[in-house]
Image (cartoon, rainbow, N blue to C red):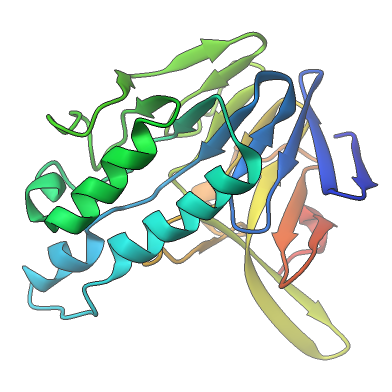
Length: 230
């Protein structure tokens, strides 16, 4: 995959389209002024509480606040959320009025497209935006779950990729984008989502030889060959 360092960060080229991975886990498509995010998992905290696992109930507010910053910084004309935007089909009913209002305000700022995920196969009733099972724009296709035989230009999420790197006897594990010049898998954006190591069996058959992980550091994105990850 072609990737080159610019003042604004790293540019990744997929099917001839230049994409900018962002430190917060979003992806900027300059030619379309489109911001792409994946796996927000809104209301995961309240879902876990219903199962007796009690987490601080602030994940939705934190995720929306981070998303608002990206929108303010990049001024997109369109946002595409690549599925599992809501942790389950009842998430909207558990959202506080404040969070519902905050989300509706963000959705109303620009065109917003929700891609169906395995956690949220049906769109919430009152949030706004447009719902699609999949989406094609130019040479890029937008889906939730990466396919074993994908279309060229597939952008997906679902797996919450993270890379573990060992250097000088020490190791670090961080969220990452991962792919090649035909596909890109985005990291999870949600506050409570975590990550799955890209060496896990779930990635078998998805990452061609020569694939790259774009690892999210504190203030920089680091392109690392997948073969160098542990």
